[in-house]
Length: 181
Image (cartoon, rainbow, N blue to C red; front, side, top):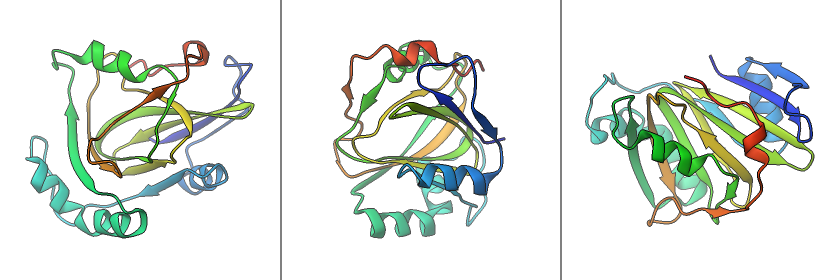
């Protein structure tokens, strides 16, 4: 189940608000410029389907986002607990960073935890199957796929080169709850 947990940036031990209500999550995130939507497949998607089949199942929503945001590249990433580089991949995203472009992810299956540091608040968004999150360019955030990652996500990019991060050097991410699996 998707969930938003709001923290004071100075107090990662005491959540200020927690909700699993999609309209409340979308409203709270819209207030900080983050897109949060629910999508349904236009066709059947099964575990192990090739990327082209996954993209085809969500083609209508993907085309809508491309038209709205000018995205130039779309791909599918699939990480499972047996992935040989899972620990290194997890570590890569756990430090606070920004991007010069939007970070748009749609979770076809599984889950991931996005944490957004906005002013004196941290918004932790547990994204699950059916959730789309669009983190705007320049937003400070980090991502946790957990120690036993299991997800399939469609990614949309403004930059055909894909994921490029600028790390802030802040240790803030180290103090907040992580996705434990």
